[in-house]
Image (cartoon, rainbow, N blue to C red; front, side):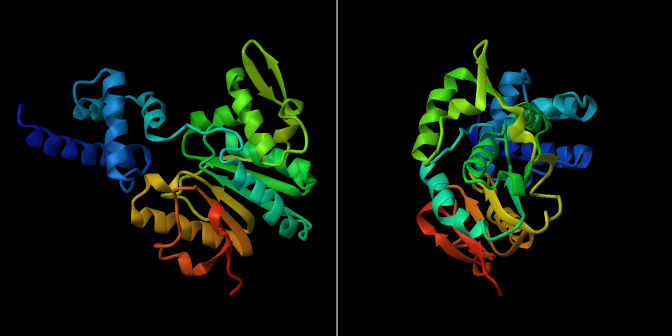
Length: 279
C-alpha cells in the first residue's frame, strides 16, 4: 500500500478493531484513550513484538492470552519517579497534611500507581509526618505486572540519586537511604512501607468507586484519556472522596474544562491540588 493516506486509514480501522477485541476478550477498555498516544504505542508494540500488521497482532492476541501482559506493557505508561515534581509533595506536606491530622483514620488512593514510585513517596511522607499508622493506602493499576513490581518495591540503584534529590526538595525529614537496602545494583524498599498498603487491580474506565477517601492522587494518567473518559475518571474521584477530601493530578492536567469542575475548589492551584466542596 503506497498511498500514505490510505495506509493511515487502514491503520485507524485496525486500531479500532484491535481495541474492540481487547475489550470483548479481556475486558480492558482503551477505546477512549487519546488516539495520538495510542497510535504511537501500538506501532511500537507491533514493531517490537514482530508483527507485520496490527491485524496480525490482534489475531494472535485473541487466541493467545499470554500476549496480553506484553501488550499492556506498551499501552500503560510505566515511567515515573519517586517524589516526582517535588513541589507537589512539599505542598501535600505543608498544606494538606495539617488538614489530614484532624482525622482519626485516613484512606489514600494512588490511582494508576504504575511500579509504585508515587505510592512509596506518599507512604514515606506520611511516615515522616506521623500519619502512616492511621492510614490505609490503596494502590491500583490495570496492569498486573506493574502491580507486582509495586508490591516488590525494588528499583534500579542508579535511579536513587534522582529519587534522593527529589525527596530532599520535597521537604524530606530524613535520608531516603533510611528506607531501602542496596545490593546487586538494586534498591529494595523496606517491607514495613507496605504494611498499610492494599494493592488492587482497578480500571478507571470500567470499575467502580473506591469509597470514603481523604486523598486521591492520580498524576499523569488523565492526559492519556479523551475528554469523555477524563470526565468519567474525575467523577469516580469525586464520588470516592469524603467532603473536603483532596485530589491531586499531574502538572499538565486540569479540572478547568471538566464537567466535574464545579464539585472541586482550588486548594493549591499551582500544584494542581483540589478540594472536594462540602455541599
